[in-house]
Image (cartoon, rainbow, N blue to C red):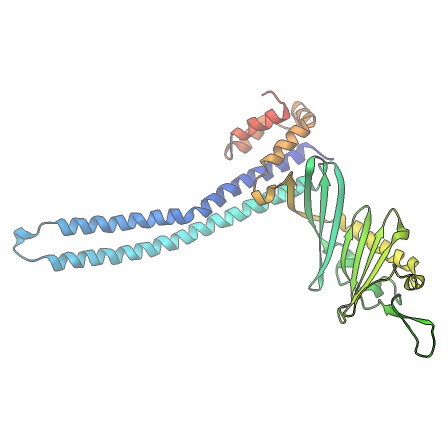
Length: 356
C-alpha cells in the first residue's frame, strides 16, 4: 500500500483530466445541436430577407418588380447555402478540435491513474494474470481483487519479458518431451499399446496464473491439437492434464493406464518455468484498463470521483498527516480543482475529516 503526496497528486490529476474529458464528451455529443442552431441563424437570415423583399411596396414605381424580388430571394438563398457549407466545414474543424482535446484529456487521466494504481494503493486479496498468444505475439493482463469490493485490471507489457518477445515453443523450454494421449491394443497381442504426442512443435498459447494455481494451454498450430495442464500450487500431486484433437478430448491423468506413462517431473519443471515468466510479467504493468468499485466500472462511466472520495475517506489518517505535515496543500487542491468543480474540494475534505 502506498499513499504518498506524490500518489495523491497523481490521483487528483487523474480526476481533473477525467472531469475535463467528461465536459468535452458532453460538448462533443451535443455538437449536432450547436450546428443545427448555427444553421437556423442562417435560415432566419434568409427568411428575414424574403419577408422584407416580398413585403416591400414597389407600386409607386409604376413597374412590376416581382421578377426582381424573386431574383433577390433566389440570390439570398444561394448565398445562405454557401454560408451553411462554411458552417458545416467550421463545425467539423471545431468538433475535431474538441475530439482531440477530449482524447488527450482521457489519455492523461488514464496515465495519471495508472501512476497511482501501479503503487498497489489497496490491500490485494487475490490476483490473476492472463497471457494469450494472438496473431504471432503475446498479450497479457492482470486482474487484482481488493478489500471493499474493489477490483482493477492492468494491461502488461510483454515486450519487456525476454521469453515473450517471440512465440514460445515447447522445444525452447525442454526438448524431446512427449506425453501419452491414447491407448489401444496390438493386433498381434493382447497387450495395451500407448500413443504418444511429441511436444516440441507446440507453442505456448494461453496461461492463467494466480497464487493458487497455474493453468497452461499449448497448441500445435499445424494440427490444432491442444494440451492443457492445471497445476495447483498447494497440491502439486493433483496436476491435471488434458489432450484434445479432432478425434475428441482425453483426460490423460485421469486414465489409470495413460497416467503411468506421464513424465510428471518434466511437466512440473515446465510449469515452474512458465510460472517464472508470469511472475516477471506481473511487474511489467502498463495501463489501467478497468477499475470497479462495487458494481460500477468507473472507467466505463468516466467518473473517478467515487475513487478519490474512497481514498480520502479510507485513508483519512494518511491524508490528514500529509496535510498537517505540509506535503499536501489544501489551497493547491482548490486551485487545481477550481476550473473543474469547485465543490469537489469540500466533498473531499469532508471525506477525509479535515476541517478547513
